[in-house]
Structure formats: C-alpha cells, structure tokens
Image 1 (cartoon, one colour):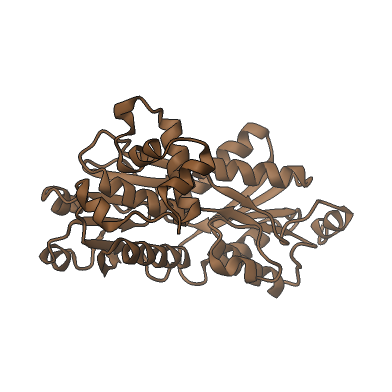
Image 2 (tube, one colour; image 1 turned 30 degrees about the vertical axis):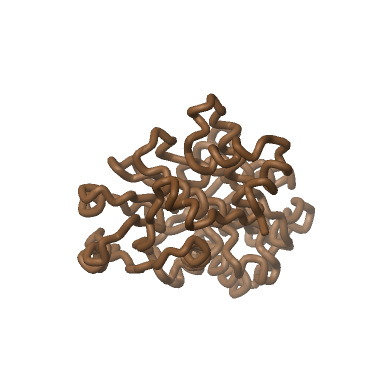
Length: 340
C-alpha cells in the first residue's frame, strides 16, 4: 500500500511536508510550488490514494461528483473517464455522468446533475466552457476541468503542455532527418490549436510543410490524409504529424489504400497515446498525455477549493517512440519524387 511515508522516503523529505503538500497547506510553511509539484506528481505516479476519512477531517467532503464528458466516442476521453471512475471508487465517491451537446454548446442534462446536489463537478474535454458553467459555480460547487480552455471564473483546470508536446514531435522528426512535413487534423478548436502551435514552430525553423484541416467525423483522418496526398502529388511530405492518434489511425488507412507504406514511404506520428496507439501496425509514435496524473490533480484541485492554490496546472507530456517514424533515407527520397 502506498502511503505518505512511501512518498516521503522516495523524495528524501519529511512525511509532514508530504502531508501538507497533498492537503494544500504547504505554502503555510514556506514550501515552494516546485516542491509541491514534485510531491504531487510522485504521489500520482506511485498511485497514492488519500484516505477518505482523512479527506473529510481536512474539509473535503465531496461524495457526489458530477462528470461532464465532451464526447463519449472520443477514445482519449474514454480512457480519462475510466481513470476518474477508478479514482472516485478509491475515494469513496459516487459519480453522475452526462454528455455534451456540441451543437448547442451545453451539457445534455445539467438540470439532472444539479438535482443530485453535487459536491463537485469535473469537466472532461477541451474548449467547452462557457456561460453554462455558471449554473454550477453560482451554487459554490467546486468545478475542475481536465483539458485546455480559456480561463473561466470559478473553474480550476488541469491541462497538458501541448506546446511542449508539439516541440518534442518536431525535434524528433527533424533529428530523424525529415525536412518536408505534413499535418492532418480536424477543424475543431483542439485540432486547430495544435495546428497553430505546429505552424509557429515550423515557421521559426523555416521548415517546408503542408497543412490540411477537414470537418471532423469518424472518417476525418482518412479524408484529411487523402486531401494531403492530392495537394502534394509532386512532392509528398516524408513525415506527417496528425492532430491526435485517432486522426493518425485514419491517416494510416488512407496511406495504405493509396499504396503507401508507413514508415517506409511516409513516417507518421500522433498525439495523446490512446490505448490503441500501440496496437496499430506499425505501432504509433506519439505524445503521451499523462491522464492518470491529470485526473489526480483534478481531484486535488477540488479538495483545495477556496484556497489560494494555482487555478491552472499544466503537466508535461512525454514522447513515446514506437515504429511509425524512421530516419529519412534514400527510399523516402525515391518515393517522394514519384509522379514528377
């Protein structure tokens, strides 16, 4: 069993400092934000779960937690929901889940959530907060969002450092020798944001690139890759960066349907590291978003509601190198110039 003493021994610090960091009171004894961050990240990595009784003693009484899922069909959010359920079970919390109506821009059943007298609300997904959140914050319900978004009054947020992830991917493919890059993605906020981040990095490095964004649906990865291939018939990119892993999966199929091999003809990368990414053939090189640590941080922020803790926590991503991206070689050069 992982205890606060386990964390303290791993970091070489006192158990009392660990306790204060996890309860949101470390600043009272002058502990730095960096120290608190290290303690919390280590706790999440080790799988530390607070004792529900101890949480109650220090003022955290969230027993009914509402969860709003942006898209139940999104495999990344599916994984996040699974982790939230695990965490809630260990914390002795019950969950009430509802979806999100993307057309109207509101949760599907917020009235039902409010009837349950929620102790806290977790929003799963990026770019969905708007005035509807006031239904919850106006009732002094602690609200934590797991995803990238604009700041909104009363909402604390945990997000991955997407800019760092994009830089990791670019540096990786450049080290592999690729200089002709492509991007495929949807036309939604999250995909467009990652596209803009990539454009900024590539522009600063003066790297040739072609970008394709299409309306999102179950086949948008296929359509985006097909459009990219049409636009680059005379000079195909040697590496394509997809906005996320699901898009990369569609892109992989489109490449094979066009007689192209990954990574022999075109290298391919994703973003998120959804469970199926490592099952692809070839297994997908991608950026891992630390879902478990993000969920743990969201529960921490709920517990710290009303304190002076940071309202946005940004966690570092991790590059996961698999089989879908290889070094640029003569075979790439030959296939790139076919059709000239």
